[in-house]
Image 1 (cartoon, rainbow, N blue to C red):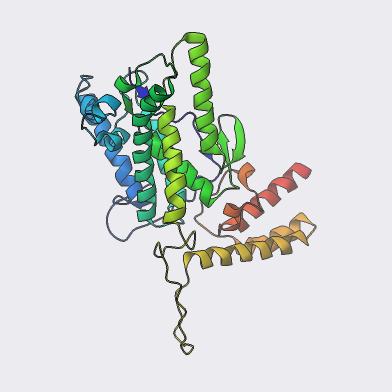
Image 2: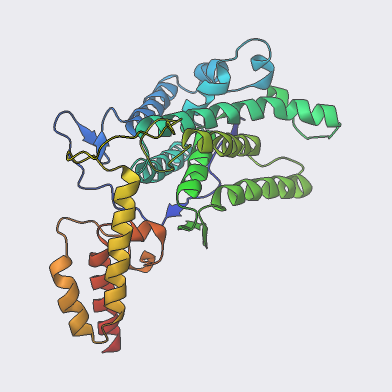
Amino acid sequence: MPRLCLLDSLTTVRILSYMAKRKYRNGISLFGYSIFHPINLFLLANVLIYILQLFAGGTGILEYYFALTPARFFHGEYWQIFTYGFLHDVHGTPFVHLFLNMYVLVMFGGLICKYIPAWKFSVIYTVSILVGGITVALAPVLLQVLGIPYPMDLFQTMTLGASGGITGLLVLFGILFPETEVFLIFFRMKARYAPWIIVGVGYTADLISMYYFHSPFFISNSCHLGGAIGATLVAPWILKGNLLDAGKIFPKQTQRESAPSSVPTARSMTEDLDTQSRKNRDLLGELAKINSFSEKETFLTPLQQTNVNLCPPPTFQPEDPFCLRCEWLPNCALRRNQMEQNSGN
């Protein structure tokens, strides 16, 4: 039975809802992005390949050639360190493996791509898959060199699933929004720690399973670890310079001496985000000076925006960097004010 690169838990990010209301002039959109956006291309590739696996009737022919088996990789089938990331388990509980990975891809990827260019997202996701695959291939070599016994021949063990790339996305989200809280199983934690806790939980489950059942856990921890390492290494380089800017990897640092121009220059994404954060901080400061619920409602009502898809009420944290950058913060503030007023009554 293949060891699955299954995300260790259904991680629910605090902010899920900005993705509605995006429109494109031409073509089809899916989940708020063009059908040709990398998020949807990765999603469709995984789904279509899964359908092909189902049509293969459980013969395992696609898995044999394209899932990652270290022994076959070291005998020349080098493409497996990438192709394994587009195959999923078709046995056991149907669709669960695929659904969990694609759920996190769409939700976290959608949030990430609001702040970084699509090509940077694609590079980090792809590198995470590759480094995850390399880690899987090297894991049995390392155990052999160190003389560590393991109750399974990892050279012949098949690994498949997208969660090397998915774990890399969690690392990237933690880099962009380190203080944002995510839910892991029943626990709330900072985004910067979430992927490493996933890896740690996986290895702990592996040790417990081997101790009590003399058999390793069914997920590929080395793949998750490799994906996290890959994103940790490449993301700071890809995002070099202005973290949320859509410019070049190596922006020029030359200073140009020229006369002031009357032509307005386009602001960067970071400048827009900083401006929105300042506006929201000023708004919250003014709101803190108001004591009565009715006056707060009068103050916030003209600032309301239409056609919004707000986050769940408990997730509104005014000091959270993600909330401060959101143009819908006045809507959330008014909703909280109304809830506090109702609870007071």
